Amino acid sequence: MAELNTGDGGGKKGGGKVRSKKQNSKVDLTAMVDLAFLLITFFMLTTSLSKPQSMSLAMPAKDKPNDPIPPKPLPVDQRRTITVILGENNKMKWYHGLLDAPEVGGKPQDAGYGKDGIRQVLLEKVKSVPQVTGDPEKGLIVIIKPTKKSNYRNLVDILDEMAICDVKVYAIVNDFSPEEKKLEDEMSNK
Image (cartoon, rainbow, N blue to C red; front, side):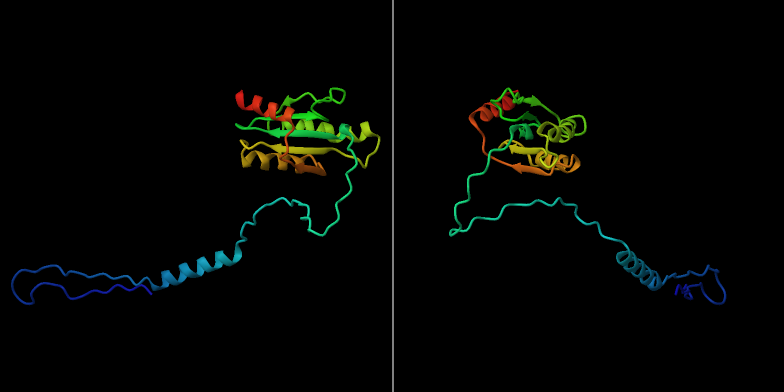
C-alpha cells in the first residue's frame, strides 16, 4: 500500500523563529511491482508465439553401399521442362526444354522475381504443358540451377514461386552443361 510518512522536522518549540515543518516522503511500491509481474505473466501465457514458417522439402534418400544400381531413368519430354538459372546480383535466366533445342524453344530469356517476372512464365507453362503433352497427369517440371555467385534469398524466392504457381515437380541441381556455363558467364559480365 502507498503510505506517506511524515517526520517531525519542524523548528524550535517555544520562542524564536518559527520554521516550517520538513516532511520526508516515502512511497511504498510493493503493490505496483506485484501488479507488473501479474501483467507480464498474463500476457506471456495468453499470447501465441509466432511459429516459423517453412516450406516442406522432400530430399532423396542416401544410397546405401549394398543397394543395387538403379535403372537408367526414362527420358523426359522436353516440352515439360523449364530450367531456371540463378545468377549474381538478382539476375535470372530461364529456358524451355533443352538449351540447344530450338524446336522446343530453348532460347534463354531474362526474367525478374515476383509477379511481373518468372511467376507469369510459370503460371502460363503450368496451364499449357498438360495441353501440349495431351496428358493432364504430366505437368510442368522446373529445374532450378543456382550458380555459386547467386545468393540464398534468390533461391528461397524461386522456391516460393514454385509454391505460389503450384508446380508439383521441381529440382535443385548444380550440374551445368558447357552451354549453361557460358550463359552463367554472360550473366556475370553484364
